[in-house]
Length: 284
Image (tube, rainbow, N blue to C red; front, side):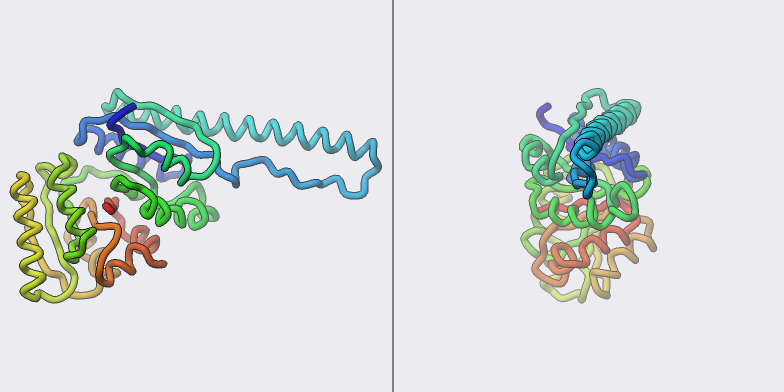
């Protein structure tokens, strides 16, 4: 499949949201969807020697039985993975997308991303993983790795999908933020939506000029963008603004040159995305 959206699903409660966001984005971008489920290391059968000091004959029988159980478990894990993919494929097709493919892969999430993203227009992941115990170690910590690794925009889906009409763009004047605005101007993803570009901080002449330039770029592309300066700190001000004024999606550069840099690539990045109740589109 060329010109596609890559959507990662894991069978968690977020998987349905990933599928619905993928269908929404596919309709706006006019492309297909490739759904991936990756069987990682934690899904692999356990190979520890549990035979202890058992005599040779009994030990051989036990090892044979353990090997058989491992094989059965591996088959069940793969079968579950295929079921997850088939359900996801049906959900995306039911939402109106005809071009939907599925891939069951083994190994590392990032390796799978690197191998498959060459012709992708967007990467989709959920904010949390398969279970609370794995949320930080699975998709949580991998979220930052995906943003660092991906050469394409990454949309982090919220817990539940709702139609996206009102978009907030975080703008700090840095290279990544300018690329984010330029990407929106060139992409049909936000065409016709209500877009507001915001800088968190003080309304200096440089800030006002940067916002005006960003709005002009978007308006030249047919996106009627508003601008504003929001006092406070990015870590809290952005999430509060989203909640208070009912924005449906937050867009930001993956890297910044101010405090937003620490927000995105530092230790608080996962907490920020999780605390925001709407999907977050991150652009390198």
